[in-house]
Length: 101
Image 1 (cartoon, rainbow, N blue to C red):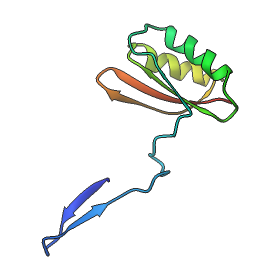
Image 2: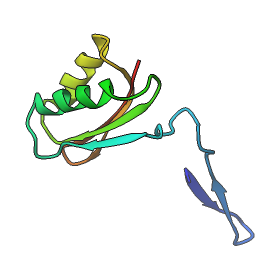
Image 3: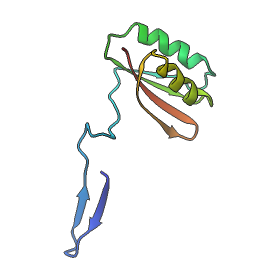
Image 4: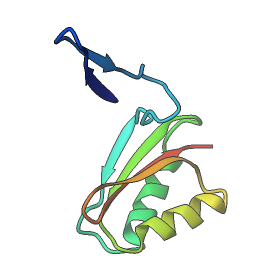
């Protein structure tokens, strides 16, 4: 739900976005939670998992390593995987959605 508005009749109107919209989070085939592991551990483990996945499958990587946002972005740009979506899901916790190419 993106928002709501009270109408003059006392009823509420809701603004809802359908799944699959431009801002929708990709659906992961595998989740790798690397919280508590310092860099380059998250990249090393993500590479191992991606190597065993089928082309087109998506890996969700969760990391709280302070350097992970820059490291994962650079790693994906170098052609290791396609970075579909990244965001900070909590204080210092980042989620990355990587597609095997």
